[in-house]
Length: 445
Image (cartoon, rainbow, N blue to C red; front, side, top):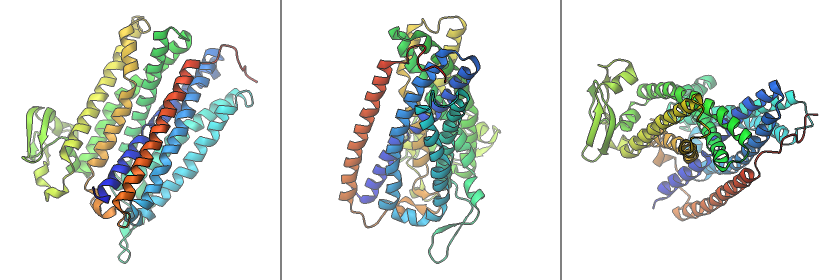
């Protein structure tokens, strides 16, 4: 295996594993804000207990997320030195902003949430929860800015001597064409992740007959957030698809396995792309829907893969296609799950329908899988470019790092990540086993 392929494997492994945790912290952060707002308004001890419990889960996830994210930055200078040289002037600003304006804000006020109960006023405690959630969400913005610039570069020029991308317009680079739709899409996915996580763990408590008042109210709040965010993803996902159609039409064609340019372009419901023979096996499609979705016109023309030459510029079609379609299937399931939950709540059977409670528990991994699928679609669909249309991935890799060293680091990182994930699961199990604090502990100062 070449050093380039191994470097791509290592980055995919580390980025994919890290991406399990930030969406959960964003979702949990805003759910904690809601819970503490309820406590501030009602002074009901139930909401204090709920907040204290979910803050412990948040802190655990935040710690593992920080640990897994460090490796990503080191890789830029080791396996991707040519990439770092090319984009260093662009990436420095958003990554510095992420550290100074977001990470420090989140981590500082998380300390207040962990150690400040009884030492600060309830209002100050609530404000701290808002700043933690805001910091987590702002952190995601700067990371999305950096990644979106790779998808749709803007606000730069190429230095004729060094052949590096040089920042010429900070705000144009920050708000490049894909930043806003990708950011909104990601934050909403994070709310889905956090709310379905709370929904599933609360359902587990109910199934076991433990901490029922805590579990029922947590489940109610999570169900509301999950329903709203799942429905919102219909519009936000569509917004992102329109942006991709306008700025990365080749990625759109790969995601839909659309080989021929067509008017009244169909949406593919089922089929297996055969990239070698440039056809779809077992195609089931609905005419004109893709044209309507990306151009609001059933007769609009959508470019197919064959219009983009050479073929070596195509992304891996099957990976892009399946990741996009499976992500959409997950999103559709989330809508069905939450709508069904609201219906059961309306008829007074949400907490007694055991098959639904088990379904909520079993659905816990699905938002994480959907996030990974979305990331795969976005990043694989950009290939063979590290920076779309400017720097090929093959030219971005370090030329002096031998394949053996990259392989050794993959093995080491995989081992460490395995230990971290096991620790996260074990500590989460302990938090679940202990449950929320008993009623009446640690009253307000």
